[in-house]
Image (cartoon, rainbow, N blue to C red; front, top):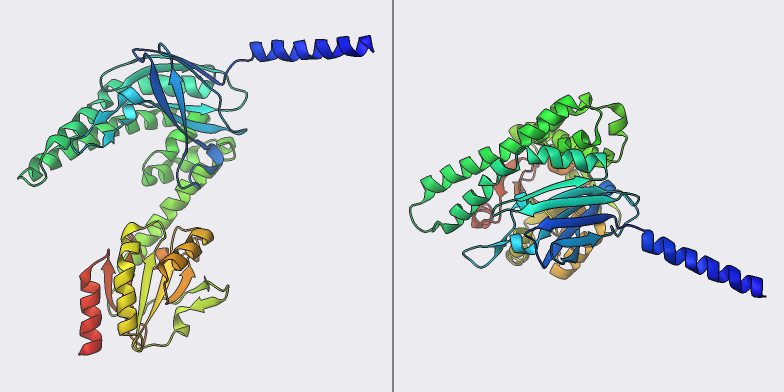
Length: 392
Protein backbone atom coordinates (compact mmCIF):
# COMPACT_ATOMS: atom_id res chain seq x y z
CA UNK A 1 0.00 0.00 0.00
CA UNK A 2 2.87 2.35 0.89
CA UNK A 3 4.44 1.68 -2.51
CA UNK A 4 1.19 2.71 -4.24
CA UNK A 5 1.07 5.94 -2.22
CA UNK A 6 4.66 6.72 -3.14
CA UNK A 7 3.93 6.06 -6.81
CA UNK A 8 0.94 8.45 -6.72
CA UNK A 9 3.08 11.16 -5.13
CA UNK A 10 5.76 10.73 -7.80
CA UNK A 11 3.17 10.96 -10.60
CA UNK A 12 1.63 14.13 -9.12
CA UNK A 13 5.05 15.72 -8.70
CA UNK A 14 5.86 14.84 -12.29
CA UNK A 15 2.69 16.51 -13.53
CA UNK A 16 3.36 19.64 -11.45
CA UNK A 17 6.93 19.90 -12.70
CA UNK A 18 5.81 19.46 -16.30
CA UNK A 19 3.11 22.12 -15.86
CA UNK A 20 5.63 24.56 -14.39
CA UNK A 21 8.06 24.00 -17.26
CA UNK A 22 5.42 24.15 -19.99
CA UNK A 23 5.70 27.27 -22.09
CA UNK A 24 2.81 29.23 -23.55
CA UNK A 25 1.98 29.20 -27.25
CA UNK A 26 2.72 32.92 -27.44
CA UNK A 27 4.86 35.06 -25.15
CA UNK A 28 5.21 38.77 -25.86
CA UNK A 29 7.15 41.77 -24.64
CA UNK A 30 6.25 45.04 -26.36
CA UNK A 31 8.01 48.24 -25.31
CA UNK A 32 5.59 51.12 -24.78
CA UNK A 33 2.60 48.84 -24.30
CA UNK A 34 2.55 49.13 -20.52
CA UNK A 35 -0.54 47.75 -18.81
CA UNK A 36 -3.03 47.30 -21.60
CA UNK A 37 -5.79 45.13 -23.00
CA UNK A 38 -4.98 43.15 -26.12
CA UNK A 39 -7.91 42.29 -28.37
CA UNK A 40 -7.58 38.93 -30.13
CA UNK A 41 -9.41 37.79 -33.24
CA UNK A 42 -8.70 34.28 -34.43
CA UNK A 43 -9.91 31.64 -36.86
CA UNK A 44 -8.76 28.11 -37.71
CA UNK A 45 -6.92 28.24 -41.03
CA UNK A 46 -9.12 25.50 -42.53
CA UNK A 47 -12.30 27.46 -41.78
CA UNK A 48 -10.98 30.98 -42.33
CA UNK A 49 -13.39 31.86 -45.15
CA UNK A 50 -16.24 29.66 -43.93
CA UNK A 51 -17.04 31.37 -40.64
CA UNK A 52 -19.10 34.58 -40.66
CA UNK A 53 -16.96 36.37 -38.09
CA UNK A 54 -13.65 35.52 -36.41
CA UNK A 55 -13.72 34.29 -32.83
CA UNK A 56 -12.69 36.88 -30.25
CA UNK A 57 -10.78 36.85 -27.00
CA UNK A 58 -9.14 39.33 -24.61
CA UNK A 59 -5.81 39.18 -22.80
CA UNK A 60 -4.01 41.63 -20.57
CA UNK A 61 -0.46 42.89 -20.74
CA UNK A 62 1.47 43.86 -17.63
CA UNK A 63 4.44 46.19 -18.19
CA UNK A 64 4.31 45.23 -21.85
CA UNK A 65 4.45 41.48 -21.20
CA UNK A 66 1.69 39.04 -22.10
CA UNK A 67 1.08 35.36 -22.79
CA UNK A 68 -1.55 33.53 -24.82
CA UNK A 69 -2.46 29.91 -25.59
CA UNK A 70 -4.48 29.25 -28.72
CA UNK A 71 -7.89 27.78 -27.80
CA UNK A 72 -7.95 25.32 -30.72
CA UNK A 73 -6.19 22.08 -31.64
CA UNK A 74 -5.49 23.08 -35.22
CA UNK A 75 -3.44 25.69 -37.11
CA UNK A 76 -4.91 29.08 -36.31
CA UNK A 77 -4.48 32.59 -37.66
CA UNK A 78 -4.45 35.26 -34.96
CA UNK A 79 -4.84 39.01 -35.25
CA UNK A 80 -3.81 40.74 -32.00
CA UNK A 81 -4.42 44.44 -31.39
CA UNK A 82 -3.36 46.53 -28.36
CA UNK A 83 -6.32 48.61 -27.18
CA UNK A 84 -4.22 51.73 -26.73
CA UNK A 85 -3.46 51.60 -30.46
CA UNK A 86 -7.00 52.75 -31.28
CA UNK A 87 -7.82 56.18 -32.63
CA UNK A 88 -11.14 57.82 -31.88
CA UNK A 89 -12.99 59.01 -34.97
CA UNK A 90 -14.80 62.30 -35.18
CA UNK A 91 -18.14 60.51 -34.91
CA UNK A 92 -17.12 58.70 -31.73
CA UNK A 93 -16.31 55.30 -33.27
CA UNK A 94 -12.87 53.73 -32.93
CA UNK A 95 -10.43 53.11 -35.77
CA UNK A 96 -7.93 50.26 -35.53
CA UNK A 97 -5.22 50.57 -38.18
CA UNK A 98 -4.04 47.27 -39.64
CA UNK A 99 -0.48 48.52 -39.14
CA UNK A 100 -0.90 48.05 -35.37
CA UNK A 101 -1.99 44.42 -35.55
CA UNK A 102 0.28 41.49 -34.75
CA UNK A 103 -0.56 38.73 -37.26
CA UNK A 104 0.54 35.20 -36.38
CA UNK A 105 0.11 31.61 -37.48
CA UNK A 106 0.05 29.31 -34.45
CA UNK A 107 -0.10 25.53 -34.24
CA UNK A 108 -0.71 23.74 -30.90
CA UNK A 109 2.92 22.63 -30.59
CA UNK A 110 4.37 26.07 -31.48
CA UNK A 111 6.17 28.29 -29.01
CA UNK A 112 6.32 31.84 -30.35
CA UNK A 113 8.09 34.82 -28.78
CA UNK A 114 7.25 38.38 -29.82
CA UNK A 115 9.29 41.48 -29.10
CA UNK A 116 8.64 44.96 -30.37
CA UNK A 117 7.74 48.57 -29.78
CA UNK A 118 4.57 50.65 -30.07
CA UNK A 119 4.95 53.55 -32.51
CA UNK A 120 2.47 56.35 -33.11
CA UNK A 121 0.95 54.90 -36.29
CA UNK A 122 2.22 51.32 -36.32
CA UNK A 123 3.48 48.50 -34.14
CA UNK A 124 7.01 47.32 -34.84
CA UNK A 125 7.59 43.70 -33.88
CA UNK A 126 9.56 40.55 -34.59
CA UNK A 127 8.21 37.04 -33.92
CA UNK A 128 10.55 34.07 -33.50
CA UNK A 129 9.99 30.39 -32.87
CA UNK A 130 8.53 29.26 -36.21
CA UNK A 131 9.68 29.80 -39.77
CA UNK A 132 6.35 31.24 -40.91
CA UNK A 133 6.20 33.92 -38.20
CA UNK A 134 9.87 34.82 -38.48
CA UNK A 135 9.58 35.29 -42.24
CA UNK A 136 6.28 37.16 -41.94
CA UNK A 137 7.62 39.66 -39.42
CA UNK A 138 10.76 40.23 -41.53
CA UNK A 139 8.78 40.91 -44.72
CA UNK A 140 6.40 43.14 -42.75
CA UNK A 141 9.36 45.08 -41.34
CA UNK A 142 10.40 46.04 -44.89
CA UNK A 143 7.21 48.04 -45.51
CA UNK A 144 5.41 48.71 -42.24
CA UNK A 145 6.78 52.23 -41.66
CA UNK A 146 5.85 53.28 -45.20
CA UNK A 147 2.38 51.77 -45.05
CA UNK A 148 1.68 53.46 -41.71
CA UNK A 149 1.05 56.54 -43.86
CA UNK A 150 -2.33 54.91 -44.61
CA UNK A 151 -3.35 55.43 -40.98
CA UNK A 152 -2.43 59.12 -41.17
CA UNK A 153 -4.42 59.50 -44.39
CA UNK A 154 -7.42 57.70 -42.90
CA UNK A 155 -7.45 60.10 -39.96
CA UNK A 156 -7.13 63.04 -42.33
CA UNK A 157 -10.14 61.80 -44.33
CA UNK A 158 -12.04 61.54 -41.07
CA UNK A 159 -11.58 65.27 -40.41
CA UNK A 160 -13.30 66.26 -43.65
CA UNK A 161 -16.90 67.38 -43.51
CA UNK A 162 -18.83 65.32 -46.10
CA UNK A 163 -21.41 68.10 -46.44
CA UNK A 164 -18.82 70.61 -47.66
CA UNK A 165 -17.05 70.78 -51.00
CA UNK A 166 -14.37 68.22 -50.14
CA UNK A 167 -15.04 65.69 -52.90
CA UNK A 168 -11.86 66.42 -54.85
CA UNK A 169 -9.61 66.35 -51.78
CA UNK A 170 -11.36 63.24 -50.44
CA UNK A 171 -10.86 61.38 -53.74
CA UNK A 172 -7.19 62.38 -53.78
CA UNK A 173 -6.71 61.06 -50.26
CA UNK A 174 -8.46 57.78 -51.17
CA UNK A 175 -6.11 57.45 -54.14
CA UNK A 176 -3.04 58.05 -51.96
CA UNK A 177 -4.26 55.59 -49.36
CA UNK A 178 -4.70 52.87 -52.01
CA UNK A 179 -1.19 53.56 -53.30
CA UNK A 180 0.17 53.04 -49.78
CA UNK A 181 -1.72 49.75 -49.43
CA UNK A 182 -0.17 48.64 -52.72
CA UNK A 183 3.31 48.94 -51.18
CA UNK A 184 2.55 46.01 -48.86
CA UNK A 185 0.97 43.94 -51.62
CA UNK A 186 4.00 44.55 -53.86
CA UNK A 187 6.44 43.45 -51.14
CA UNK A 188 4.39 40.34 -50.44
CA UNK A 189 4.16 39.50 -54.14
CA UNK A 190 7.92 39.87 -54.48
CA UNK A 191 8.33 37.37 -51.64
CA UNK A 192 5.92 34.96 -53.37
CA UNK A 193 7.85 35.12 -56.64
CA UNK A 194 11.08 34.20 -54.84
CA UNK A 195 9.61 31.51 -52.57
CA UNK A 196 7.16 29.26 -54.42
CA UNK A 197 7.65 26.50 -51.82
CA UNK A 198 7.06 28.49 -48.60
CA UNK A 199 3.88 28.42 -46.48
CA UNK A 200 4.08 32.19 -46.17
CA UNK A 201 3.79 32.50 -49.97
CA UNK A 202 0.55 30.52 -49.89
CA UNK A 203 -0.84 32.83 -47.20
CA UNK A 204 0.32 36.00 -48.95
CA UNK A 205 -1.29 34.81 -52.19
CA UNK A 206 -4.68 34.46 -50.49
CA UNK A 207 -4.42 38.15 -49.52
CA UNK A 208 -3.62 39.39 -53.04
CA UNK A 209 -6.19 40.64 -55.53
CA UNK A 210 -8.15 37.85 -57.15
CA UNK A 211 -6.64 38.34 -60.61
CA UNK A 212 -3.13 38.24 -59.08
CA UNK A 213 -3.96 35.05 -57.20
CA UNK A 214 -5.24 33.43 -60.39
CA UNK A 215 -2.13 34.48 -62.32
CA UNK A 216 0.32 32.92 -59.85
CA UNK A 217 -1.72 30.09 -58.31
CA UNK A 218 -0.27 27.40 -60.61
CA UNK A 219 3.30 28.44 -59.80
CA UNK A 220 2.94 27.42 -56.16
CA UNK A 221 4.61 24.22 -55.06
CA UNK A 222 2.16 21.29 -55.32
CA UNK A 223 2.67 20.50 -51.65
CA UNK A 224 1.50 23.98 -50.64
CA UNK A 225 -1.75 23.54 -52.56
CA UNK A 226 -2.42 20.49 -50.39
CA UNK A 227 -1.04 22.05 -47.21
CA UNK A 228 -2.66 23.99 -44.36
CA UNK A 229 -3.67 26.88 -46.63
CA UNK A 230 -5.40 24.59 -49.14
CA UNK A 231 -8.94 25.70 -48.30
CA UNK A 232 -8.04 29.39 -48.25
CA UNK A 233 -6.35 29.12 -51.65
CA UNK A 234 -9.21 27.13 -53.17
CA UNK A 235 -11.80 29.52 -51.75
CA UNK A 236 -10.09 32.55 -53.29
CA UNK A 237 -9.50 30.79 -56.61
CA UNK A 238 -13.19 29.86 -56.73
CA UNK A 239 -14.07 33.50 -55.99
CA UNK A 240 -11.92 34.50 -58.97
CA UNK A 241 -13.68 32.01 -61.23
CA UNK A 242 -17.09 33.21 -60.09
CA UNK A 243 -16.07 36.85 -60.52
CA UNK A 244 -14.93 36.17 -64.08
CA UNK A 245 -18.10 34.28 -64.98
CA UNK A 246 -20.23 36.97 -63.32
CA UNK A 247 -18.64 39.68 -65.47
CA UNK A 248 -19.27 37.63 -68.60
CA UNK A 249 -22.88 36.93 -67.60
CA UNK A 250 -23.54 40.60 -66.85
CA UNK A 251 -23.06 41.40 -70.53
CA UNK A 252 -25.75 38.90 -71.58
CA UNK A 253 -28.40 39.40 -68.89
CA UNK A 254 -30.00 42.50 -70.36
CA UNK A 255 -33.47 43.86 -71.02
CA UNK A 256 -35.30 42.09 -73.84
CA UNK A 257 -33.44 38.79 -73.47
CA UNK A 258 -35.01 35.64 -72.05
CA UNK A 259 -33.88 35.01 -68.48
CA UNK A 260 -31.96 31.76 -68.00
CA UNK A 261 -33.93 28.95 -66.41
CA UNK A 262 -32.75 27.49 -63.09
CA UNK A 263 -33.78 24.83 -60.61
CA UNK A 264 -33.21 25.31 -56.87
CA UNK A 265 -34.40 23.79 -53.57
CA UNK A 266 -37.41 25.38 -51.87
CA UNK A 267 -38.31 25.46 -48.18
CA UNK A 268 -39.99 22.05 -48.30
CA UNK A 269 -37.08 20.48 -50.16
CA UNK A 270 -38.73 20.31 -53.57
CA UNK A 271 -37.18 21.80 -56.70
CA UNK A 272 -38.58 25.02 -58.13
CA UNK A 273 -37.60 26.10 -61.62
CA UNK A 274 -38.13 29.51 -63.17
CA UNK A 275 -39.99 28.08 -66.15
CA UNK A 276 -42.45 26.27 -63.88
CA UNK A 277 -43.75 29.59 -62.53
CA UNK A 278 -46.63 30.99 -64.55
CA UNK A 279 -47.63 34.59 -63.93
CA UNK A 280 -48.15 37.81 -65.86
CA UNK A 281 -44.93 39.08 -64.31
CA UNK A 282 -42.23 37.25 -62.33
CA UNK A 283 -39.92 39.06 -59.93
CA UNK A 284 -36.61 37.42 -59.07
CA UNK A 285 -35.19 38.81 -55.84
CA UNK A 286 -31.54 38.03 -55.05
CA UNK A 287 -31.10 38.58 -51.31
CA UNK A 288 -29.45 37.20 -48.15
CA UNK A 289 -30.25 37.04 -44.46
CA UNK A 290 -26.99 38.94 -43.86
CA UNK A 291 -28.03 41.83 -46.17
CA UNK A 292 -29.38 44.76 -44.16
CA UNK A 293 -30.88 46.58 -47.16
CA UNK A 294 -32.61 43.38 -48.28
CA UNK A 295 -34.31 43.02 -44.89
CA UNK A 296 -35.15 46.72 -44.79
CA UNK A 297 -37.02 46.41 -48.10
CA UNK A 298 -39.24 43.46 -47.12
CA UNK A 299 -42.16 45.47 -45.64
CA UNK A 300 -42.71 47.35 -48.90
CA UNK A 301 -42.20 44.19 -50.94
CA UNK A 302 -44.91 42.47 -48.88
CA UNK A 303 -47.18 45.46 -49.42
CA UNK A 304 -46.74 45.24 -53.20
CA UNK A 305 -47.03 41.46 -53.25
CA UNK A 306 -50.40 41.76 -51.55
CA UNK A 307 -51.40 44.59 -53.89
CA UNK A 308 -50.51 42.72 -57.11
CA UNK A 309 -50.77 39.10 -56.00
CA UNK A 310 -52.92 38.19 -59.00
CA UNK A 311 -50.47 39.72 -61.47
CA UNK A 312 -47.03 38.89 -60.06
CA UNK A 313 -45.12 36.05 -58.47
CA UNK A 314 -41.88 36.61 -56.60
CA UNK A 315 -39.03 34.10 -56.33
CA UNK A 316 -36.61 34.94 -53.55
CA UNK A 317 -33.13 33.48 -54.10
CA UNK A 318 -31.04 33.51 -50.92
CA UNK A 319 -27.32 33.82 -51.68
CA UNK A 320 -24.20 33.30 -49.54
CA UNK A 321 -26.42 31.92 -46.80
CA UNK A 322 -26.62 28.86 -44.59
CA UNK A 323 -29.87 26.91 -44.67
CA UNK A 324 -30.44 27.60 -40.97
CA UNK A 325 -30.11 31.39 -41.33
CA UNK A 326 -32.15 31.36 -44.55
CA UNK A 327 -35.08 29.55 -42.91
CA UNK A 328 -34.89 31.69 -39.77
CA UNK A 329 -34.95 34.94 -41.76
CA UNK A 330 -37.94 33.85 -43.83
CA UNK A 331 -39.83 32.99 -40.66
CA UNK A 332 -38.87 36.18 -38.81
CA UNK A 333 -39.78 38.41 -41.76
CA UNK A 334 -42.91 36.40 -42.62
CA UNK A 335 -42.14 36.26 -46.33
CA UNK A 336 -45.16 34.89 -48.24
CA UNK A 337 -43.68 34.35 -51.71
CA UNK A 338 -41.66 31.49 -53.20
CA UNK A 339 -38.28 30.99 -51.59
CA UNK A 340 -35.27 29.00 -52.80
CA UNK A 341 -31.64 28.87 -51.70
CA UNK A 342 -28.80 29.30 -54.15
CA UNK A 343 -26.40 26.46 -54.99
CA UNK A 344 -22.79 27.54 -54.50
CA UNK A 345 -21.48 25.00 -57.00
CA UNK A 346 -20.05 27.27 -59.71
CA UNK A 347 -21.92 25.31 -62.41
CA UNK A 348 -25.28 25.79 -60.61
CA UNK A 349 -24.77 29.18 -58.94
CA UNK A 350 -27.68 31.31 -60.16
CA UNK A 351 -26.09 34.53 -58.86
CA UNK A 352 -23.17 33.85 -61.22
CA UNK A 353 -25.51 32.98 -64.10
CA UNK A 354 -27.35 36.27 -63.64
CA UNK A 355 -24.21 38.39 -63.17
CA UNK A 356 -25.10 39.53 -59.64
CA UNK A 357 -22.61 41.99 -58.13
CA UNK A 358 -24.69 43.56 -55.36
CA UNK A 359 -27.60 42.80 -53.04
CA UNK A 360 -30.47 43.11 -53.26
CA UNK A 361 -30.80 42.79 -57.03
CA UNK A 362 -34.25 42.39 -58.56
CA UNK A 363 -35.38 41.42 -62.04
CA UNK A 364 -38.86 41.89 -63.48
CA UNK A 365 -39.71 39.31 -66.16
CA UNK A 366 -42.76 39.22 -68.43
CA UNK A 367 -44.95 36.19 -69.11
CA UNK A 368 -42.45 34.84 -71.66
CA UNK A 369 -39.66 35.23 -69.08
CA UNK A 370 -38.05 38.11 -70.98
CA UNK A 371 -36.20 40.62 -68.84
CA UNK A 372 -38.22 43.83 -68.53
CA UNK A 373 -36.00 45.62 -66.00
CA UNK A 374 -33.17 45.14 -63.50
CA UNK A 375 -32.72 47.00 -60.23
CA UNK A 376 -29.60 46.98 -58.02
CA UNK A 377 -30.10 48.03 -54.42
CA UNK A 378 -33.24 48.90 -52.53
CA UNK A 379 -34.85 51.55 -54.72
CA UNK A 380 -38.31 53.05 -55.26
CA UNK A 381 -37.74 52.72 -59.02
CA UNK A 382 -38.57 49.02 -58.73
CA UNK A 383 -42.02 49.75 -57.28
CA UNK A 384 -42.69 52.56 -59.76
CA UNK A 385 -41.92 50.14 -62.58
CA UNK A 386 -44.37 47.58 -61.19
CA UNK A 387 -47.06 50.25 -60.98
CA UNK A 388 -46.31 51.35 -64.52
CA UNK A 389 -46.47 47.81 -65.92
CA UNK A 390 -49.56 46.58 -64.10
CA UNK A 391 -51.70 49.70 -63.98
CA UNK A 392 -51.21 50.83 -67.56
